[in-house]
Length: 97
Image 1 (cartoon, rainbow, N blue to C red):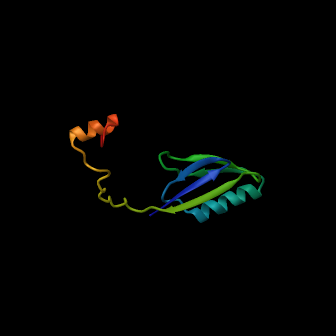
Image 2: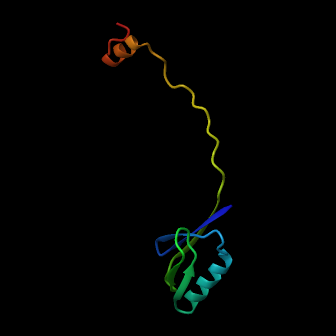
């Protein structure tokens, strides 16, 4: 599944999964070419957003493939297991004396 974001004038909008990116690009391009206008967006977590697009507005679309969770790898034990006496000696700096 893909997730798409729109960065418009420095603000980032997470677009709803049902957004047709090619249609949205065409709508934004027409708004910019006509001198400016509002474009409605379906965004994640909100019903909608209305943004103003003008000829000087910077617009970036990003689409990422969503992947399932990464498998958890078992962690290797770190360090050397010390007895309680060895651990205290090590912390106090007396280890090996």
